[in-house]
Image 1 (cartoon, rainbow, N blue to C red):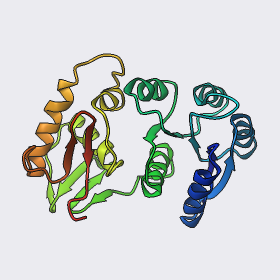
Image 2 (tube, rainbow, N blue to C red):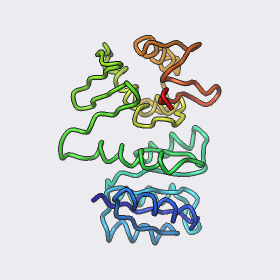
Image 3 (tube, rainbow, N blue to C red):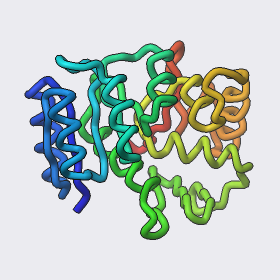
Image 4 (tube, rainbow, N blue to C red):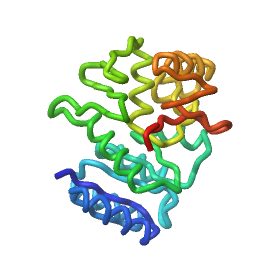
Length: 227
């Protein structure tokens, strides 16, 4: 059973997240302040931390630094701060994932599963399946409709990153920071080109998308075409 500490000052949101994650089999503890949350992390040594940035006693960015000073526990930031600069700075400061409010608890639980897969050293992660798209991170193989896709290493990394966040819009800058490891440099045109290549290999186009849906002015998301 994986353990989770939720640091969120809104009691209603905190209790909702805790109830859903508990129902999924997680051991959950909650905290409404930064210092209470830090104390729980030190005492509990959780497998994942869910961190809000707008806390009453200490800004979440400062708490993130304090957590990183004592542990490398995976951290999913769940916050209302949606500016690209906030996303990039938070990821650079040591967060493992970033989720912008409002979000569904299903999206949150998917992010928790994803960071647990990436941080686990107990064996290969289970393949990610979205409709007839199957991505095996361990074997670095992706199939669509049962046919293997011929992907470059970066195309595979990009597809895997989006599939682990199915239904969630990801900005080009976030993709540059996380997939290309270039938080402050590099052309976002690189993302456009790789998305175009992925579309062709998924059997779709920008005019007739199936898996890759562009949200103009915001970013891109991978969706389940059967829902």
